[in-house]
Length: 99
Image 1 (spheres, rainbow, N blue to C red):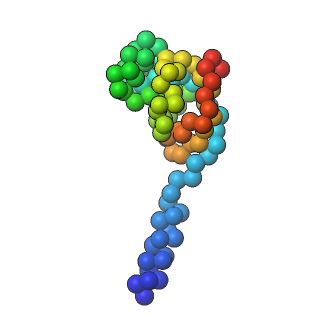
Image 2: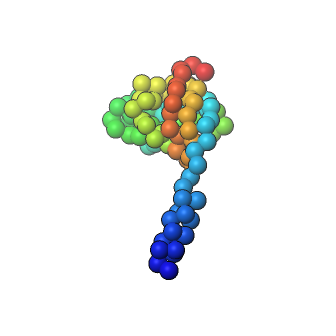
Image 3: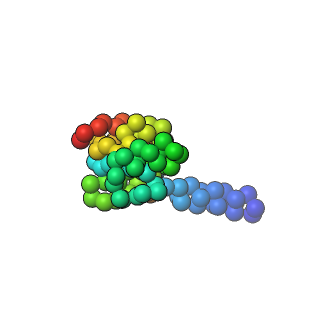
């Protein structure tokens, strides 16, 4: 009985895992401290000081970045990002400035 219950719980836990969706998003790379208050100079300064980079979309939605090293050089810039979105976290696959 314990094995059956363990198996059922294991299967149920897999259904709770967030499924990542492939997306293309446009926005600005800024920092978690300033959030949607986009100030390019501040974003560069804060990200260089260790603040987590985020993406603020053109629609005003905020996404955390799962792999922040891929976006640091784009701090304060408008970008187009292709990646995998799970909940509010974006894993960046490709990024282009000026889109």
